[in-house]
Length: 348
Image (cartoon, rainbow, N blue to C red; front, side):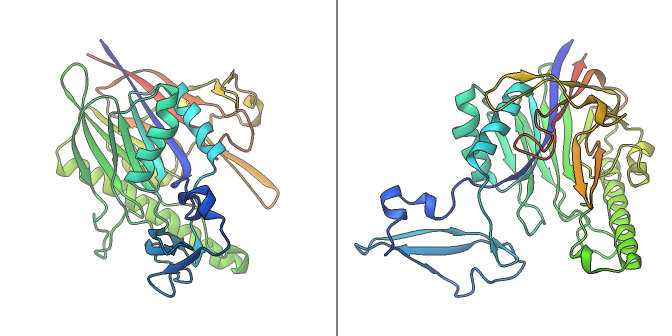
């Protein structure tokens, strides 16, 4: 038997850690005379596109330096706090996964920089790393890191809904991975429709209810699309579907996955110790907060909820020996508002 560990982790906005100013030499970045001029006059005020703008910095000595300015809804997209990045890296190191599926990664450069500067110093090395730009205007994409060879990548970002528009708000990223026994494992990482309702405080109760119905309808369509993609490829074996599904495993929105003979594994699992800020493994201190296992905590309007959003579904031929959630050490989250989940497979 060959053991393979697969993990999923929503890294919570793993954007490039460099702000535009921080990319300059320190002695230059803080000079009051340094000027920043965007190629497009409205680069900062542009609404909603999330597309990067090239900017040019003119130094006092006349030297010109260029960079990328990323905005969303008129606000500068900031890099992830270095301390949070370090904590995320420690959690990933403790996971020790052969295949790591990530959500909310900015782009390939951000992932490669994180791997070089934060993971490798901890002895973590993923030779195969893939991010494919998806549909989200905030540039929060899905990614796969693997120690095992990735032999093929497919993006399903343009898979249409009934109107012909892309059904996935981010992407469904598929990787064919060669396991140590020489056979293929089909891993799909996704980030389904969020529960967020824009400007909810301005809406009537009826409007909020309608918005929630629309969210659930879209998530159901996305789960259905996953099963359609499996059928199109005639895949029935050695399948792993993972990611932040933004709903519980038994939710009606995920019925299509159950009807496809897939089984969610994490809800039957247990928690394991996670690293604190100093890297010390701390046992789960929050077992009494929820009767069921969870990866995400949300507090709004004085109400706290716990949910298992981060899931791993497998086809019936795969033998799962263990399933776990690596528990945070701070109730607010350790570098992310999600906890990572993982399974160990025993491949014949």
